[in-house]
Length: 360
Ligand code: KG4
Ligand code: ZN
Picture 1 (cartoon, helix red, strand yellow):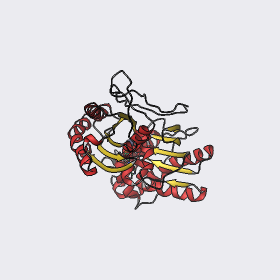
Picture 2 (cartoon, helix red, strand yellow; picture 1 turned 90 degrees about the horizontal axis):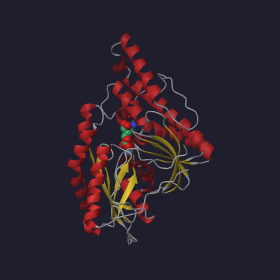
Picture 3 (cartoon, rainbow, N blue to C red; picture 1 turned 120 degrees about the horizontal axis):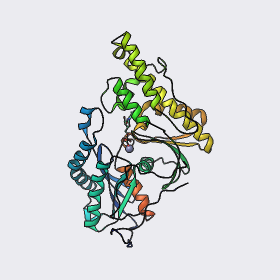
Picture 4 (cartoon, rainbow, N blue to C red; picture 1 turned 120 degrees about the vertical axis):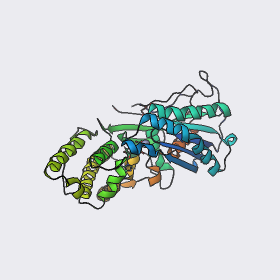
């Protein structure tokens, strides 16, 4: 098992210097891994401001365009950070450390946040903290009460990842299962696109699913051994099913949209929860959390509650604002890294494929 640990040097490209640590640290964190430019400030682990600017430009293209994302981050980052400082009533000189999302994410997008924050660290001569975005999604559970107790199991579901993680401590996590191909958020978005819904399709599909019959249509799913997932098969199955139906009736999608959304959602959520159940049994865990953008899904939340009732699990679901990308979760993770003395050098670079502990 590999445990995430960041290197310790700070304030220098190649040398280690010591930091005098505040007992009540004030941390500014930025998030720029994909299409949200966000900044947040925490004071001794309490969130005191949280600003998110969502990039609407991608809606016109049916998906995130990396180059446009980088440009929008460049435009947004200064006003977003300024607003976060203003709302927290904090001046830059009061900061104990600055933090940024190191990865995973889009390289150009990550570069904007990392360069900006590294310049601040250099200018203010304060420590720099590099944060793993997926680990931060999980630690979003510590922004508000009630918080899970260690160890717990977390299903992390986003646009780029689907992972089952055993969380042993704030910074000690092990991935015990993950997708072999598409992420579940990607499956939601791609199927929503086939159904003619705007990008990102997940929330639109969710909204329509609430008026439909989840058992009206069934789709073949790919079975993967162990605790891993596969979502590319269902996307193709829905594509062929729709092609055949539309050949017979051009209005098929419009006439059955809510039932199609409900059936797709039910299938995707069942695939997720089958592995969560298996993982809970295998690890003898009764505290189950969900995190990441897809944890906002109403079907996932309600099907999870139903199983939790049967299995006597205690379930932890983040507030909607902390499901999708935000900097509050980066600030929270940075706070624990600060306490653990996990600082980084100014030579640290973004890593689009950054990973933390894995059993594979
Ligand atoms: O965590 P996130 O904001 O960004 C990544 O790190 O990828 O997750 C974005 C993903 C998108 O695929 C989006 O469609 C999905 O989360 N999503 C949802 C819902 N809200 C966001 N999927 C299904 N139902 C939702 N309500
Ligand atoms: Zn995310």
